[in-house]
Image 1 (cartoon, rainbow, N blue to C red):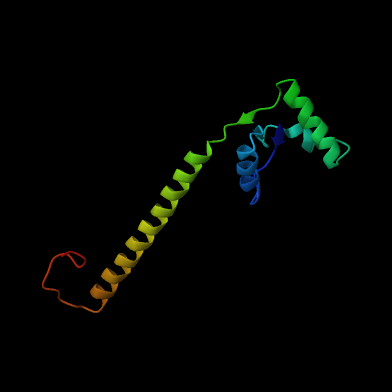
Image 2: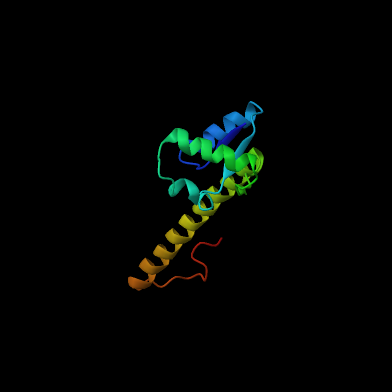
Length: 113
């Protein structure tokens, strides 16, 4: 079992890899683990001991981690959304250029058939 407090740029890849190895990963809500921030002695070992103690006594608020398949679907949906936003932005710029230059078009839809 691994208790994880923060998912940085490499944290999600590590979480995926450990999940493939059937190792339980628990994501702790970092806003709710304020005792670590206010500890007098600060080191990674002390922070790890405090996190494990919180986990054993059920004092730690766990965040839900989606299954890998759902994270991949969400990633694809986000990517598609960014492409659609980019297409809309380009179409709007073309409409502005046509209007700014006073071009008269014979058709109603600039991007239609």
